[in-house]
Image (tube, rainbow, N blue to C red):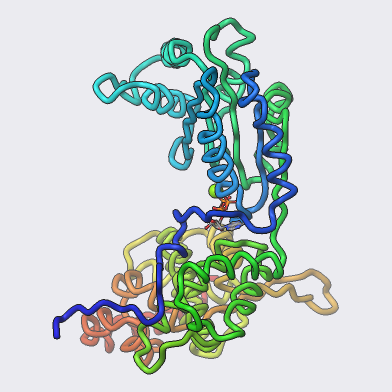
Amino acid sequence: MGLFERDTDIYRDRDALREDYQPAELVGRDEELTTYTSALQPVINGEQPNNVFLYGKTGVGKTAATRYLLDHLREDAEEYDDIALDIIFLNCDGLSSSYQVATHLVNELRAEHNQISTTGYPLATVYEMLWEDLDSHGGTVLIVLDEIDNIGDDSILYQLPRARANGKLEDTQVGLIGISNDFSFRDDLSPKVKSSLCENEIHFPAYDATDLKAILQQRASVAFHDGVLEDGVIPLCAAYGAKDAGDARQSIDLLMKAGDVARDDETTTTITEGHVDRGRTALERGRIEEGIRGLTEHGHLVLYALVTNDLEGETPIRSRDVRPRYTRFAELAERDPLVPRRMRDHLSELAMLGIISVTERNEGRRGGTYREYELDMPVEQVLSALSETVKLVGVHESVVELAEDAMPDVAAAATHAEGDEPADADRSDASLASFE
Ligand SMILES: Nc1ncnc2c1ncn2[C@@H]1O[C@H](COP(=O)(O)OP(=O)(O)OP(=O)(O)O)[C@@H](O)[C@H]1O
Ligand SMILES: [Mg+2]
C-alpha cells in the first residue's frame, strides 16, 4: 500500500464547499435577484446600463449573486447579434486608491504585451488612457468593483459613471456595479457619488437559520456521498452561522471543517454532531490565533502579562495591576514600556477582538468606575498563538506547566531559562510596583 491513499468515504466533491465554488442555483434570494435582474435588463435592450450598488453584511451572497447573474447575462447577450458585452470583474482588496483601480482597469482592457506600469503616471494621464481604451472597445462594458470600500478616495467612483456625460466616451456604454459590506462606506459617500453610483441600491439582508439550512443542504448534496451526514449536522452548522451574523460563509466553512474532522477520524464513515463541535473549536482557534498574530508587539506583551496574571488566579484584574508584569516583560524583550494610557488602549483592543473581557465596576461610596479585565479564551490557545513573544520574554513560571503542550518549540528551547528570567520577572514586579 502506498504512503498516500485516496480518501473517498466522505466526500464526493470537497471543492463544492470552497469559497470559489459557484453554486448552480442561489437559494432563497429570489427577491434580490429579481431586483438585480431588472437593474441589468437595459444591457440586453442595448440601452445605457444602470449603475448598481450592492450592500449587506459579509457572507450574504453579494459576490455569489453577482457572478451568477453576470454569467447568465453574458450567455443571454450572446443570443443578440447587436450586443457586444464585456464584463470586467475587479476585486478591490489591496487596491487602496482610485489611481490603482484605474491602472488595473487599463490593464484589464489591454493585451498582454501592452500593459502599463501601476505606478509613475499622473492620475490625469491614467484616466486619459482609461477613456481611450474604453472608448475604442465599443459596445457595453460592465465594470464590477467588488469590496469597493477598500478604495480610499472616491474620484473613480465619480469619474466612471459620468464619463459619457462629460464627453469622455462616445462609442462605449459603461455600467458600474459596486459591492460593499461596509455600511459606513455607503453612508459616507459624497452626495455627488451617491447619486450616480447608488442609482439602483440593492440591500442583501442577513440569512436566518432556515435560509442557511437550505444553502447547506444544496452544497452538501454535491459535496458529500449520500447518507454520510447525520441528521443534526446541517441544523447545527446553520445555527452557528445564524447566531453570529447570518453569514453563509461561516456555515459552509464549518460544514467543511466537520467533514475534514470526520475524514481524519478513521473509526467512522459518517459526519456526526460531535465532528461539528470539534470543527467549531478548530475554526475558533484559527480565528483567535489570527487575531492575536495581527496584534502589535506591545499588544502581545500586554496579553502575555494578562495570561500570567490569569494563571496565578489574579483575574479579573485592573489595568494598573497588570502594569508591573507588562513593564517587566517589555524590559525583558528590550522594548520601552508604553505609558499607562497606551497600555490600556491595548487592553481595549484585546477586548474588542473578544480575546479578553472587560467588566465595569463601581468604586463604592466614592463613586467613579473602573474596569477589570480577564481572559475570555482558553489559556492554552492564547499561549500557543503567543509563542514568539514567550520566546522573546522567557517562560514565566506560571506557564511552565502548560508550555509543553501549548508551545512545544518554546518549551524545548527555554527550559534552561526557567530559573533565571521568569523568577526574575516576579522579583522585579514587586520593586516596579512601588513606582506605580
Ligand atoms: N443564496 C445562496 N445560495 C447558495 N450559496 C450561497 C448563497 N449565498 C451565499 N452563498 C455562498 O456563501 C458563501 C459566501 O457568499 P458570498 O461570497 O457571495 O458573500 P458576500 O456577500 O460577497 O460576502 P463578503 O462581503 O464577505 O464578500 C459563498 O460560498 C457563496 O457561494
Ligand atoms: Mg464578496
